[in-house]
Image (tube, rainbow, N blue to C red):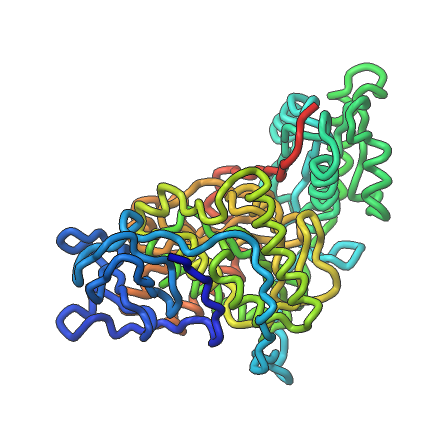
Length: 511
C-alpha cells in the first residue's frame, strides 16, 4: 500500500483539554478534535502515562491521527481502548519531496506595535552585542592542546576567581577537532570556534593553538575578522619560548582583569536571542513543555521584538509543512525546503532511513514515530512567522523573529549550534531528563512533575503542572519570569554544577 504524506492546510494543532469524558477527564487527554488516539495522563491498566490509547477499532493500514495530523499507519488491527505504540504503528515518511503545492499562509501572525519593549540587565559589548553572562573562556584551536587548556583553567580558578568579582565563571572547552579534517568538517569546526570567540557571553577569550594543525592559528585569527583585541587574545604553543602554561596564565590574568570592568546595564529584549531545543522527549513533550516554549517564543518575537531559533531538522520531518506555510517570504520558503531535503539527502546518502527516529527512550516515553515526535517538537516554535533560515555554523544577522537552523537532533551538537548561531541561552525541554549543558546557560524544562521531583538538581522549571490544573497563561507568566531571571544572572542547575561542553557536527573522513 502506498502511503503519501499529507500536506497540512490548517494551522498548528490546538490543545483540547476535554479528555475522553466526564469521569476520565483527569486521566486522559485528546489533543485535537481530529485525533483518533488519546494520551494517558497517568498510569492506567496496561497503558503507561504519556502513551496513546486507541479511540476506535483500527484495521491494518489505517492512519493514526494525533495533534490533528497522521503520525503513521497501523501495521495490524488494534482494538478500541487498548494501548497503541511503536509495536503497532509504522511511519509514513520516505525520501525527499518537492513540496511544490506548499503555499505561504495568508494569515500569518503580525508583531504587536505601540507597546513598550521590556529590558533586562545585560552586558553590552563594544561590537553592540549583549551578553547574559560575563565569563572568561579558553578555546583550543585543536584537540592536541586540550590538556594545556584544562590545566590553565584549573590554575586560574584556584588563583584568582572569586565569586562576586564581576566574572561569572572561567571555562575551558576541549574538543577533538581542528586537525586531520577536510572540506565541510574543517569549515564547521572553524565556524563554531569563531562563533564562540565572538560570543557576547564571554567577557574575555583566550584562544590556544598548537601551530602545526590544519586550523592554523594565524589563519583562524584572520577568519575571526574584526574582533575586539581587548577581549580576545591568541597564543600559539609552538611559538612560545619556554613554558607555554606560564605565558597562558599571564594572558588569562590580563583577560580576567579586563572582564571585571564590564557591568550589567538595562538592555532591550530586542537583543535577546534564545535557542529552542528538546531531548529525552516523552508523550507529554508536545502537550506541556513544548507548547509552553511556543507561547514564550511568540511573546519574545511578536511582542518584544526578540529572536528565537528552532533546530533539530530531522525532528521536523513530518511537520515541516507547518513551518513552510509560516515562511514570511517565498525566498524563505525555498530555503526551508532546501533545509529539509538536504538533511533527508544526508540520511539517504549514508544508506539510512529518513524515519528511523525516535530513540529507545522516546519510545519508552510514548512516542512511536518520527511524525509524532516532529509534531510535538515543532510546537516549540509557536505560531510566529519564520523570519530567517540559517545554515549550520551561520550566525543570526540583523533580523529578529523566529529562525530555523540546520543541525541534527543530537542534543549537544544541536545545542552547540544554537549557541554558535548567537543565542545567549538555550531552553531545553525534556521528559526523561539529562544533566548536560552547552557553552551558554541551558535551562531545563521538565514535561512532567515526576521528573521535576525526581531530578531537582537537573530541572530548572516544571511544565508538568499544566496537566495538573494550572492554566497556560499562569504557567507562561511564571516561565517568562524564570527566563528573565536567568538572563539577568540567575544560574541554571547545570551552571551550578559547572557543566559546559561543546560538540561539533562531523560528516566526512578523518585523515
